[in-house]
Every structure is written in C-alpha cells, then in structure tokens.
Image 1: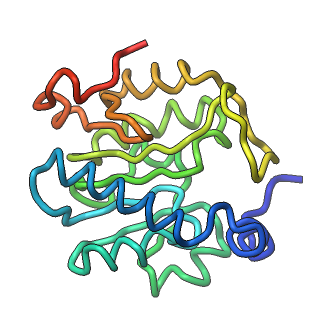
Image 2: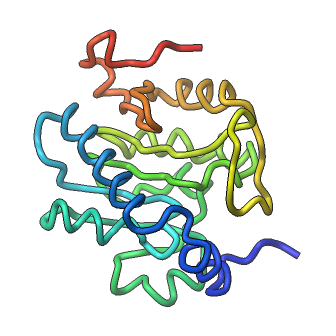
Length: 199
C-alpha cells in the first residue's frame, strides 16, 4: 500500500505531533526570506512552493511580505482539494517539473521536507526544472544519512549529504548554508565566502 498524504497524515504530523510548531516554522520562513532578500538586495515578490502540502508556508510568508505572490504545488489530492482554491495550491508531482513551468522564475523557491522521500529517478527528472524556476534563493530542506531525524520515517530514504550536494550543484545551485541554495544566476554575483565549499 502506497503512502497516503490524506487528512489523517496532516493531522498526525502537522497538528498533533507538531514537527516543531508554528514558531519554528515562522523562524524558518523568516530566515529563508532574509537570505533571499540579502542576496537579491530587495524585498522578495514571488514564492514557488513545491511539495507544499497544505500550504503551511503561505501564512507566515504573507505576514512578512503581504504583497508577495505565493504559488504551491503538491501531489496530495486531499491538500489540493481542501485548500487549493483558498491558498493557490495546484496538483503536481516533483517529476512534473521536468516540463512544468507554471510561472516566471521566482525570488524564493521552497522545497521543504520532500526530497528525502523521493526516488532518485524522480529527483533527477524534476531538479533541473527547479533551477530554471529559481531566480533568487532555493530553500531545499532535506535530511541525510548523517542526521538524527525525528518524525515521519515511512518511506524515508537515508542518502548521504554528499549525494544531495552533488545533485544540487549539477543542477546549478550553489550552497549558501542552512538549507539555502543560490540560483545559478545569483551564484555568479556571490562573494567567495558567502558560498559553502564544494565537497
């Protein structure tokens, strides 16, 4: 039986279990926005959230930047059916971004807590599209074999951190720290010590 991202799943992991709660999410969003705005040297205007679930990033983002456009995509029929219209969420799988170009390149691209559940083939298909859709900073939060993880371990794939670094770099992203990666265009303007060393 395949994993179901239904109401019971979101109730368990995003409400009862909490996975860090609202304050932790607000800090994460604020950090990603600050990194993007630091490198862009202006307020962000657009956000694309891939694997957005119920669109949890939307409210804290709009609290910080009320005029920012937010667009989310997820494979959960439940999340899209329940929140799609109100939160601007649409159906898509990660691999769909091999061809899917739903908007102009954005200031902040978010893919949070998604990649470590995806098969390598799906990541390889979709990741180049993410690089094309990002004109600023990508927040690519994922966890690796070296990490102690707490939370949903069903379908979790414990790859080494170097695997993600290599694939992100091959797509053109440059690591800026704390799950933040500069887009190929923005990376060209970064100072040497703003970038994490390649490994």
